[in-house]
Amino acid sequence: DAMVIQNPRYQVTQFGKPVTLSCSQTLNHNVMYWYQQKSSQAPKLLFHYYDKDFNNEADTPDNFQSRRPNTSFCFLDIRSPGLGDAAMYLCATKKSLSSYEQYFGPGTRLTVT
Amino acid sequence: GENVEQHPSTLSVQEGDSAVIKCTYSDSASNYFPWYKQELGKRPQLIIDIRSNVGEKKDQRIAVTLNKTAKHFSLHITETQPEDSAVYFCAAIVDSNYQLIWGAGTKLIIKP
Image (cartoon, rainbow over all chains, first blue to last red):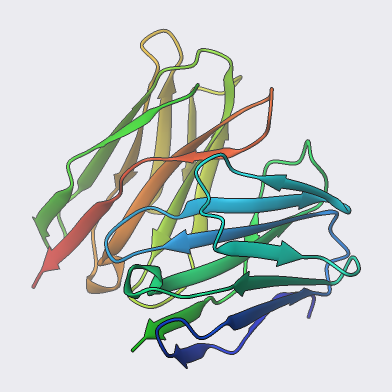
């Protein structure tokens, strides 16, 4: 089945130790998103790609970076995780920029110790 | 920019009763209004959506209504069941940038 896959599902990292989260999709969608979701809050958009065009939300901390080496894969790099970065990270895709429906991956739960 | 407000933040209803969650939006150019259900530790799941040219849409026990003039839309769940317990998010999309603008979420509790 076509889907959005995130690895790992659970990630534990130490304060200040770089970590990379990955997302892949078999939907061949042009647009990919990274969201951060903290407990009891709505998802917060960090970045999105339209094809290889990168768009950074204005309030996304510099500590967060992203890479999209090809259509199928997208990575979220956290250079120096702080305790406040502990959250669920959701990847989502959609077919094109003007499409409405987003398809979410299962998320990666990040714990910072 | 667009802003979406959602109420109530928590809703507790008796099993079998109906539940209504309301959202308002600020940008009259918004054209698409999805509702997501999120169970604890899981991804948001699209349960129903409505476009701006439609006033009401129904899918079994869930329905969404849209009032463009008043800029509000509502989710209605009838004959609630324990598996309806979750956090529900409304959202809106403006065609100028096609980004999802989320409401703050409603925690729905179904009491047995």
